[in-house]
Image 1 (cartoon, rainbow, N blue to C red):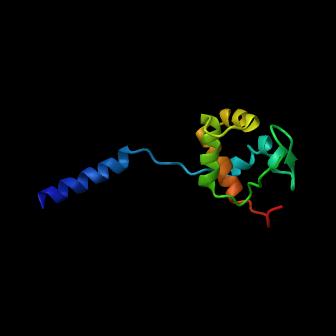
Image 2 (cartoon, rainbow, N blue to C red; image 1 turned 135 degrees about the vertical axis):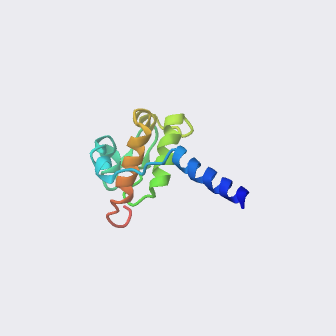
Image 3 (cartoon, rainbow, N blue to C red; image 1 turned 90 degrees about the horizontal axis):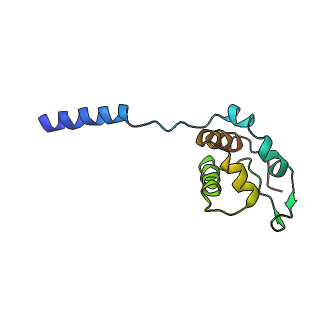
Length: 111
């Protein structure tokens, strides 16, 4: 019983000590979309740099995926000049906020 009590106390203390992962704020994210809207906010937009491709819609995408993609651009694991520059300017909280906004802003079927 003594070991169980110690383990329980240790678990409670660890819960207080470990950092809490803050979820993004969709309202704050909406205020940060100006750098995204130029490409991702235009239905059917195709970019010609560095090659021609359809720009993906972000609305309705899972927040975890958006954060992972932004981190990959920032860390150089994904290679797109514009996205690397934009992601490089974002804090982790910015990424979380943007992801929360886009996850909550689905507006219908993809282009």
